Image (tube, rainbow, N blue to C red; front, side, top):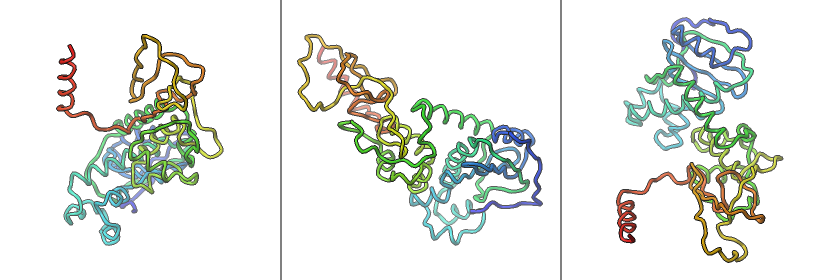
Length: 316
């Protein structure tokens, strides 16, 4: 899809060499600018502003709104071939999506692409006045909201796994991860299934019609667990104690009083406190029965919690 020009486009202002995309966006927002901030680099992209507010963002690294709507089955590909320019209203009037769905999808695509556009290092910047996003959606967010969201996304990536080796590189499953059993989310399974050593996380996102940032985040989780890696690089395995869920040999006799395992904060895995020289070194928060974050999304219902509470009360 192409951007839409309104009025007479210009190329003001010019940015000094070395200006970051975030600083340029803040400057344009303060001026109340309307137009397109083009970020040349890897991965690069375009941020669209209207009266100083961000109303769209595109990047080669992230699926656009049309790809997301097609992938989820809301809009067939043939519809896009006949849709007019600025198709948001036409999609709603044609009954393909509701107004809320198109705005939500546009916002998701905006934040998804902004992570890659604003994180482009050593970028060359250009601003073209009078150019608006091709979708024609009405929703806008402030530049501060976009920048804050990108900063939170970056922190989440670093908390999951400090290495960015798999962020922009093709990934492939590790043949022998050393885990007896692994519980993955649906998206994590799709990533492992389609990781062929040729596709980057962003290309996998385009293939699956999923958020590029969400795929990048789950690739880091999988890399932290030693399940995927970039070809030619060893699987990451920071040192931490872990206990095999289904040991290959009979376990030794337990001591008379055994300390209960402690849940690793922020995960659904358990770490055995007692030391053992035979344990395999695995990533933090990962055991041989690995339940990766995101694999369990549904909280227990109230009736289940009430039954558990009643059973505990009966034991008193």
